Image 1 (tube, helix red, strand yellow):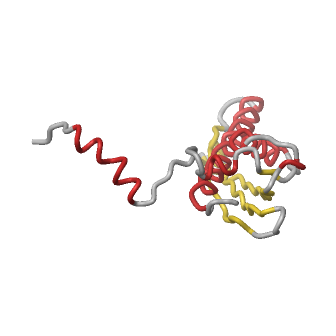
Image 2 (tube, rainbow, N blue to C red):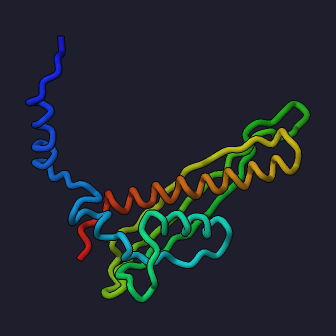
Image 3 (cartoon, rainbow, N blue to C red):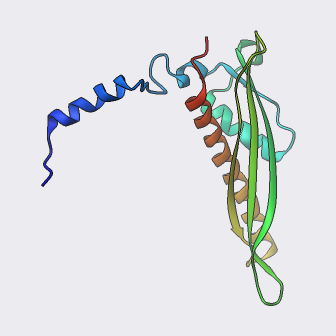
Length: 163
């Protein structure tokens, strides 16, 4: 039978330190290195505006002149019918979104990180037209929150320590 042992609990930080674990928001971590130093590309539609807004909340909003990195993000979304009735009415939709990103060092032009994040959300189309439009708008906003969280997580996880 397993019982609680404080000595085992105290060994966890040592084991994590030995494997190269470093807290993202700790001193010298990727979160600390990027916070307030990333300029996000200007949005070109409502969805990319929501994405940029969420990225700036996570990475810190800064003046373009005071940043070391440029994060270029391209957003694509597609709506897909998911539930179709016998009378050929679509009652549920999914919105699939993709955000391709490239983090570039502004001084050297070197690509620090790049990749793509992908996810989806859904909404119901069974209410009134106003309900359906509100549900779609909400689903698109939620999707941009999800994509921005995934993007920031990938940046923190894959970025070598910036200078």
